[in-house]
Length: 228
Image 1 (cartoon, rainbow, N blue to C red):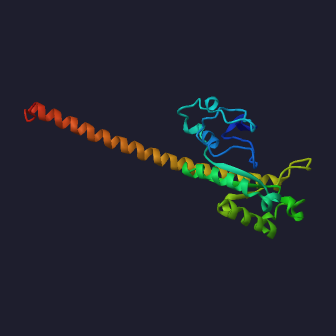
Image 2 (tube, rainbow, N blue to C red; image 1 turned 180 degrees about the horizontal axis):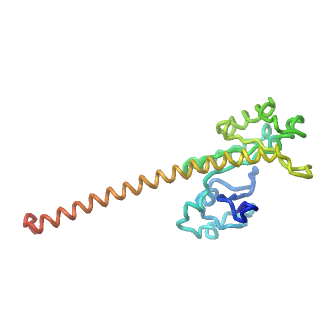
Image 3 (cartoon, one colour; image 1 turned 135 degrees about the vertical axis):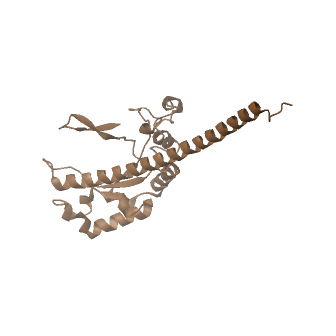
C-alpha cells in the first residue's frame, strides 16, 4: 500500500494506492485470491509468492474489515504496445477477476501505458494524444476486449529518458488519477446509499417490534390480554 504526500502541507492525501503482482499465463492472482484483496483481508506488505498456493490462514486476519480497508476502484495496467498480442489465457484471467469485481460493484479502469511506443509523433510531445488515430484505435481495441467504456481507458506516457519533469506527461497522469478518484467516489456513494437503506430497514423492524411490545403492554394493563 502506498500513500501520496502533499509536500506543501506535509500530510498524506486522502487516498491510498495498492499494488498486486502482474498477470501472466501461468502466474499471478486468480479469481479466488483476488477476493481477499478486494475485501480488505490482506495485510499491508503481504508477500505474494507465484510459485506457492495462496495461504488463506496467513491473510484472513481481518474477519470484519472496514470500508476503508476495502478496494474502491481497480485499475488494470496494460502496455499499449502489447494490446494486439495479448494471449487469450491472460484475457480469460482478467475476465474472471472482473466477475468478482462486478459482484461487489467495484468500478474498473485501464491505465494504458507506453503510448509513445505505438506512435512516434508522441515521443517528444504528448499534448495531442487524443487526436492521434492510432491511439484512438488502441483505446477502441482495449475497450472491446476488456469490456469497459472508452471513458474508462486512460492513456498515459511513462517517464523513461526524461531528465526533468514534463508538464504534458504530468497532465496525462493527473487526468487519469482524477478519473480514478471519481469512480472511487461513485463506489463510496453507492455504498453509503446501501448502508442508509439497511439502517432504514433495521429501524423499520425495530419500530414494528416496539409497537408490538407497546400494544402487548397496553393489552395486559387493560386486562384485555388473557393468559392461557
